[in-house]
Length: 220
Image (cartoon, rainbow, N blue to C red; front, side):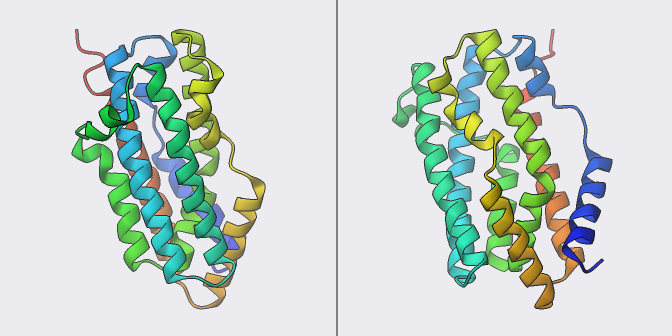
């Protein structure tokens, strides 16, 4: 399991084995998520994306040479754009930026960005690159479902959905940079098993994020 193809396939296989239903998105598609909970979504995402932006910037500083430096700098810049787009969603909920910043996040919902920070501090250049490659399909599909549900069930206009549409479609250039980063890292001695572990953990903690938002929606 040393080639890029083998490592990506191994990560995707393990992720497929642990994938489960997304209760929050299921509820969203049936119009069962109250407006207050949509405010939670905006607040949790603000904390998550703000943290991820710093984590990717840290990775870019630890691995400044191409292709890793280019990849992680682009990802940090992407998170900055996503934060700006998120404010359009918040505005559609009649929330100001100060309201979103003041939101108190659920600890387990922020386990994913905390783990990403750990990976940025201590991981190899390959780890987060593989996490992106292995999870991009499912993550993109989730954000597509969220955007479509917010439009069809709640009447949000496209401008308010920019944050979700941004993450629904990852540019191929970014995926190519991730592939090159993974290839170079493996060739330089990065541990493929550790990279797969990172990808699998990222997936599990992304699921935990959505599960926290779904908590209590089926009560009563």
